[in-house]
Length: 309
Image (cartoon, rainbow, N blue to C red; front, side, top):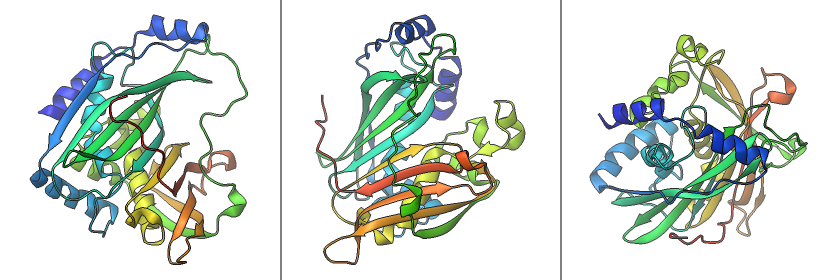
């Protein structure tokens, strides 16, 4: 029932288009409303849901997957973005980047997640807004996740610049050495929707994705990122206490498709793990300029951000 209510809110939530387009025209950022949502997840729910998440993403470690709180926090993202005071719509926003800053391991016990707007700024294609999740266990902040969404302004009000759509968080193509093949079948979007509650039509079937301008159904971004991290986890620092993951979504992953995960990293002092790894997910069937669909980096933790800025 909660998913149905949120879907209706998302469908009917409209942008404050005059305000946002005026801010783009005048090259100033809109103010951020003070919207904060908190949700408690019992250990029982965490255990049940993480089992399904782990099976789908091939995660075999004792600690929770780094993307699991982002998966749990989807409903909080929706609540914040669809709040009456939010000037942003939900439908039409483009999820462009994530920063996952893990400070301590996450275990299968009670989790509390707080969500709020953390930053807003002008972007070459409109306005970028950051939504932050603060993840706590036993009253200790263990992870902070910043997700960036893009509100695309009308072409008539956009300032023309030579900037790219987002920061390059991976290394250059020449540095990549390790390759894994990742397959996403036609039902991948439906399987993820069943455990996440995200039944956006663009992820389900080709015929309904075409109604929204896509040639194929496309995979959920969090699902794609989680698959990449799982594949890289045995060789990287994700098994340690603290680390960070940054990524940028470049293009959608069509369903079905075969992707190549390329990575390269620097070995730690022990030589058994890499202290930092850059990675990219590449679609060899796409035209060259659109082949890199996702890029990112796993490495040292970022400076701790206060939970209540």
